[in-house]
Image 1 (cartoon, rainbow, N blue to C red):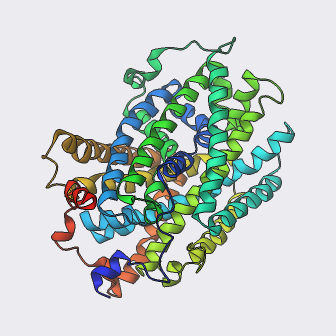
Image 2 (cartoon, one colour):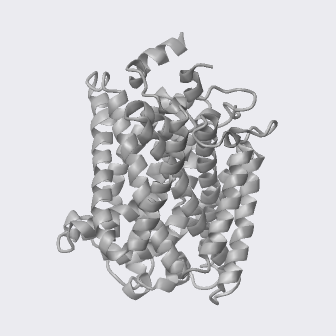
Image 3 (cartoon, rainbow, N blue to C red):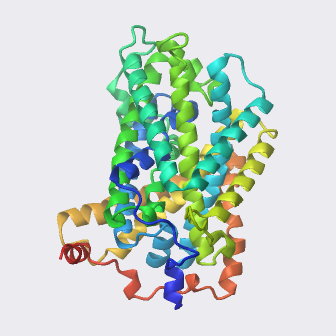
Length: 491
């Protein structure tokens, strides 16, 4: 096999995922489940309010506008290179192998950190259904670990099983969210009156750019996860178009849900409730009881539980597919590139993630409060998101540079919007690194320290002359002409 073929990771009996099993509806569901609207709202609202107070809706709006630039970048990059490694492959071709490797590593460490902070709400949500008492750390840890292992089993069973489970869970989740959004917006007793000022950039005028950057970083965490559709490229029908469109539609859905619930919590809950660290992982429990007291309000807890389970599943898919492609390219141990012979799933990568995540989860549960772990984890992941989303936004501009001026649409969606989105991610990263250095060094160390660990395996496999680290040829650094490819496919 040539070096180019080795880097591309040609499918073989041992290294081939199951092709063409996911359609557009499946991709949309995975995009929604990846962003996990109920989970994100439940676990991040308190952190967002603490950072920007009533500016949460504005932070989500403006971060969302820039985030769509990255969504379009992923969509066009998938058209040219339908690779399960996504940014790991694209950034290498467009910018440099080192940056490509770090993009893949950023997804891996962000996913592993997320396994920890997502498993806590799973445990506490189960307890909240049956009692209003605050559960012990041990109880939350045990229940959370059980749910995590159930999700590992679903992912290991195959992508068709995973998607079937996701369709059921995400449909119920979104239906419950829409029900409670209506109850909250039309609630008889609003603590704070609605104002369009919540969406205005002037709401950050007195707080300064650092506050906006902090809010944008948290907002990026809200949206993160939709790109699981790109990691499923090799398992999707018509991957050049299906996964990208699924990501776009998924982000539109979760963006609307995020805005509605941010406004709802501002109106229904008091500032004291929105700043209470005891509600850091279950603010939707409080909202549910405020608009439908009793067992009715507990239905919203069910939505959070389903969302948590769903996003654990999609995150497992993202990290296992990324580890699989890196193992297949031998930029990490080759064993990670092995698949199950019948289920066509990356079984070694899945088991490795399961063991390592459980160790991190159990260990972290006894080193600090749940609120502190969630806050530091969200911030650290936000930094890593900015890195690989920003690099992907730059990559589409480089790879499609010959096509940018062929039409207004190309210029906006292939060039300008992704480029501005990448600049925004870089700006947020720069501002927050400076801010965290003086306010939350632990989160900074978690975010950038875990990224630095990736330099160890990177230099090891680079020193062994791995084909991935060879500079791509000039021809390889140009995307194919999409219109020509589609024309040829229709002939």
